[in-house]
Image 1 (cartoon, rainbow, N blue to C red):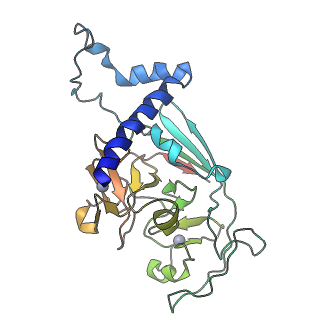
Image 2: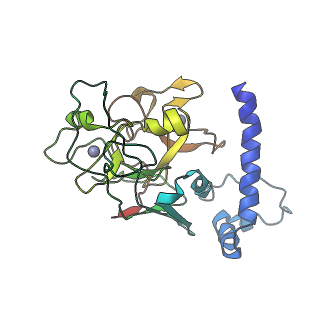
Image 3: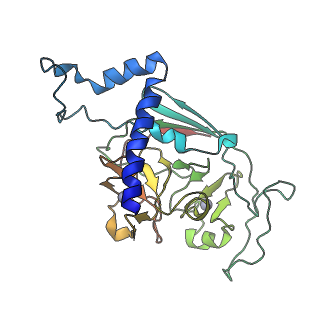
Length: 277
Ligand SMILES: [Zn+2]
Ligand SMILES: [Zn+2]
C-alpha cells in the first residue's frame, strides 16, 4: 500500500518541481544551465543521458523550501548558490515557555518526568538568518557544529546540537523540555536538541523531512522504509546516503534517533553555511 502510494507521489513531486522551475524568473533558469554544465556532451543531439562525469552531479535542494510551512515566522529566498532562511524562531505549537498572555501559552501540568523542572527563560522572537548551501557537498575536513543554531526545522525552530551551554549538563537539561520536547535558551531562543515530536507525531510523519542543517543536508525523522533507525544505522555524523521521498536518486541525510546524540553526531558532513543572530 505504502509503496503504491509512493510510486504515485514521487512522479507527481517531480512534475511539480519541473513545473515550478519552469515558472521561476529567467535569471534562475540561466543559472541552472551553468550548474548542469551539460554543454560538454555536444554531438549527441541531446540523446545521451549518461551524465556520470564527476563534478556535474550536484543536487539542488531548493525544492525543499516548499516544506517550510510556518510562514508567520519564516522568510526564505533562493539564491544561485545559497538558500537564505530568515527565521523569528517562534514555534507554531503550544508551550509553557510562551508568555502567559501569548495565544500559544499552555501550562504543562502533568509531565511524565518526575524530575521535570521549568527553566527561567521565556520564548522571544529571534532574528536568525541561515545561509545554507543550495548544492550541499561533503566537506574535506568535517567541522564541529556550533553552540546555538546548527540548523532550522520546517516550523522555523532551531536545531541545537547534543551539548548544553558550558557548565550545564545536557542530560539534566532534558528535564526542562516542554510538552513538545523543546526549551528556550537564555536569549529566549527556543530550540530542539532531540526529536521534535510536534512535527513527527502531529504535523508530519515519523519518516518526514524535518528541516536542514547548516551544511544543506536534510534531516529526517527516525523512521525509514517502515524501520526505526538507531545510531548503529548511521555514520559518525549521524547520517547516511539513501533514497528519500524528496530525493529518489539518493542524497546524504541526517536522521533523528531516540538516543544521544539525537540529531547530529561528530559535526557537519558537508561544508556548512553560516547563521547570524
Ligand atoms: Zn538547549
Ligand atoms: Zn535515511
